[in-house]
Figure 1: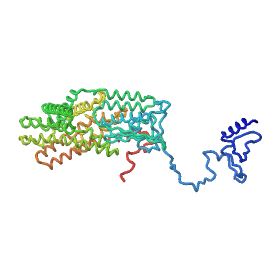
Figure 2: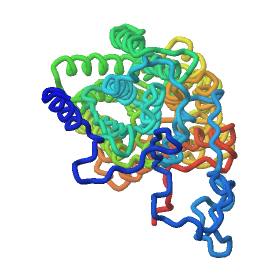
Figure 3: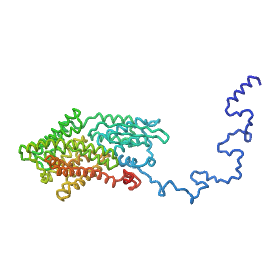
Figure 4: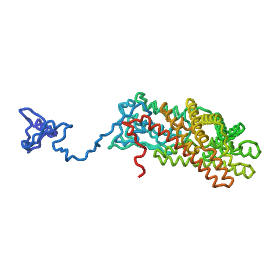
Length: 550
């Protein structure tokens, strides 16, 4: 061997990581004359295995207990004796129920999502999915949807794209969602602020249909298609123009005046006052004034027309004119949403919504009180005792209740296909209230609660039948039950320096408002309680809260 070949062999050996260094005895690497590798499970040399107990080959199975296991000395089992209940999420129920059921579960107990076909091989684009989720939640929250249903919709969107370990959070003005792929990965969090709110139940229904399509695995809606449909919803104009909304507010006030005993003259006077108030509110909104002042200005024309009729000694029921104008302004939608959030455990959002309702109510009170104060100074003889002389005209009042619900639905920008159903629901609600209060002599608070409960029950049934939101079927139907008369007579007593009597009447109005909100929510919960709910059994449905307050 030449010197060059010797150097080459040394360099090859030096570069080999498996060559034994000089002075170390090489291990025997041949068995029966053939080279073989050593398994990592092989017994090391020098270890005596002869004395080791014989091990049954069946013990190597993962399903057989180890030889040291003893049933008497076994530690407490993690699995309960009754086993872990199987959660069965059927597809023939609305996605709201399915998502609400999973949101009330701990993360470790949620079933794994079904195979997703809406993503490519690289997986879902997590930031875009979270952005789409926040945009959908923003439209729902701005449209007046309850916080629990907004969270359910956000969770449904994320889950439809395979992001099952996500936690949505909804407050009055802030939406946030966090997604953590696994326990060892960093979470991804995004948030969005809701700065503007608008009432458009047509857009709300379109968002619900989008979430329904996303939740259906057979639809396979891609991110691009979802973004395109979301952009179309934002570009679409309201279904009713401004002059139709102004006319609807006038008809609503006129119908409300008939409910409290008004005649034809009162109907047109209340309609005129409500339309003037609506136009003044639009003018203030165009100037950038807050909604508090818009409600204050909108409450003045109906009250002014009622006072003017009294001063002019026109033989009409002026109190019905003012009461009809108040019906068009009372924030029943925000009140029901606030109480619903409180009953479902979203206390921060509920407190914010109820505070908003209080500000609106104070604005209405301020506008009416200003007019009534000057009316009393001018010698207007406004009698609070006329609240006890409401004439009983069942057919006229039922027709007025249906018209009130219909115009309320138009003001809420509902789809034309839902207007007739919600109008009939409002007529049924007033019929139940009239039968209980005027015929049976039951208190107005209890009668209102029962009628509102039927509204919530029918609204929930209709929403489940159409896989849509329950708001378009319930909000307008509670219009005939709003406490317009109690509010007006309380304000009138305060304007006449009868503060105690006025506060009692306002407390009655607040009780009626709470009865409406609680009744609507209770009717919805009763429908979910007795209808089929996803889960292994009827008792498997979890409540919104895990404790009873302690």
